[in-house]
Each structure stands twice: as structure tokens, then as C-alpha cells.
Length: 130
Length: 130
DNA sequence: CATAAAACAGTAATAATTCCTATTTTCTTC
DNA sequence: GAAGAAAATAGGAATTATTACTGTTTTATG
Image 1 (tube, helix red, strand yellow):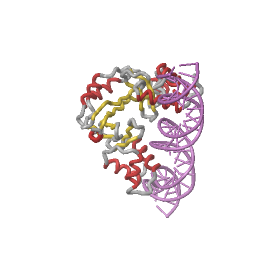
Image 2 (cartoon, rainbow over the protein chains, first blue to last red):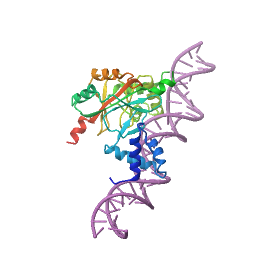
Image 3 (cartoon, each protein chain N blue to C red):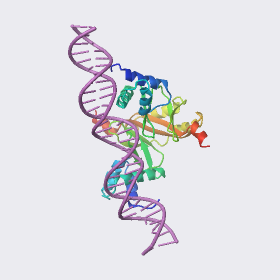
Image 4 (cartoon, rainbow over the protein chains, first blue to last red):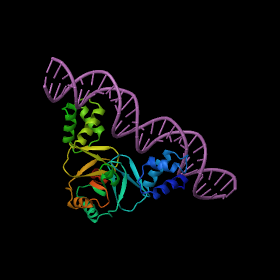
């Protein structure tokens, strides 16, 4: 993987935010600093970074991929109302992990991991609908 | 919600299979019995049924929606290799549920539920790659 | 049976993402 | 530092899952 200005900008932006942006949002943000960057480049680099475990790809129920440069184990919260993704402070609950690990090959399938995220109504949206 | 032959066929097919088909797969299957059905009708009905909690919509990491007529609480397994979705016999582990319930509003967000699914290599694919 | 609401088939439109190509940038070696 | 090969890029076209639209048919109801 060669060095590239565009990839650095993408990584830098992801590291600077906790908003779990989509490719489109990354594109709009990075374009401010590198106006000629193309959307294809953003997608290619996000995939490259995710495939190499430098960033994390999040599949939430809106069907749009979100990205997170924080690769430490933590859980996410998806707001059904506004679609924003938040970090949860729940630190990899022992109960969850034990449970996931214990599943092993009971089913005959090789279980390598679990996707877990929480959803509901976020703080902001709860205020608005009151 | 009025009665409709097309919706019945879709529901019947979903109840007859454990394959967690996509809209496209439902379409192809139902078309065998009702050749003039349109893909739009399949999508509309799947959404209608899912919105009314008659079936369940599954968002796996392939980004394509899968559907399941089994609304009893159970977990799913996604094969990274072939993309098939399987039921897991893990019956709503108490540890998981307790954990999810206990999260409550610790974060300030109203947590209404959790998305959980497992992934890895399924039995069939494990055999093939040996 | 008449009417209104709901559902339909068929097709066009959207939207997220990937693919393609000619050009530019990066890395390596001299 | 220049030259050549590999990697990356911009820009746009293509793909794919899904939704929206429209005129017609089906269903429920009085």
C-alpha cells in the first residue's frame, strides 16, 4: 500500500470525528481540504482501510455503510429517528463476550464473531418529540 | 390490509422455508406459482409484512435484506463465504438479554433493542475449503 | 351490483456502490 | 536527481437493490 495524500486526509478526518460518517459524508468533508478528490477514491480507500483493519465498517439498519477509525472494542447505538450513530460506553460486556465465545461450533458452523449494535431513539430526538 | 393472493403466496413461501431469502429469491420462487407477479409487488408486500411484524427483516453484512417468517426470538448466522443465513439454536441467551435490558438509558439514549447476529464460515463452506 | 379503497403489473427513477480508463503520483534503483 | 514500474487518482459510466409512479384490476362493503 503506497502512501497517498487522499488516503491520509480520509484517515485524518475519521480519526478526528466520533460521528461514524458515511462515504458521502467523508467525501464532503475531505473535499473541503482537497477539492479535486473523487467519490470513487473515497470508496476505494475506505474499503482498503477497512479490509486492512485500520478502520471499522459498520452496517446499520439504514443499509448505508458507516465508518469508524476507533478500532477498540466498543458498541454502537443507532438512532431510528435521525440515523445518527453513537458510541456506547458499554465496554465489551463480559456476559456478551462469554456468550459469543461459548457458542463455538454447537451449530456445526465455524462462528468467528458477532455483530452487535443497539438501536432506539437518541437523546436529541427524544427531546424533539416530547 | 386487504386480502391478496400475491401476499398469501409470499407469506406461504416464507413460512415453508428456513433459507432466509432475499426479495429477489422470494420473487423467483413465487413466480413459479404466479408467473405474472411483479418484483415491485414482492418488495411492497415484504415491507408491509415486516412493518406489521408478521415477518422479520434481517440486515446482514452483504447489504441485501433477508426475510424470515419465524418471528420467535432466535439468532442468525451469516456465512461470509456463501452469504447464506442460518438459524442458530441458541435460544435468546439469558446473558444477552439481561445485558441488553440493563443498558437502559445509561448513555442518555433510549435503547429499544439490539441487533445481534453471528458470522463465520458455514458447515458446507468449511468442507469445501478443506 | 356499485362504489371506494387497496393491491397489482410493469416500468421508470433513485441511490449507494463498484467498475473502467487514461493520467498522475509514489516508490525504488541506478 | 532521472527512469521505470507499481499504485493511486479523477471523472464518469455501469451495476444493483430498492422505491416511486401510473393506469388497471381486485377486494371488501353496503
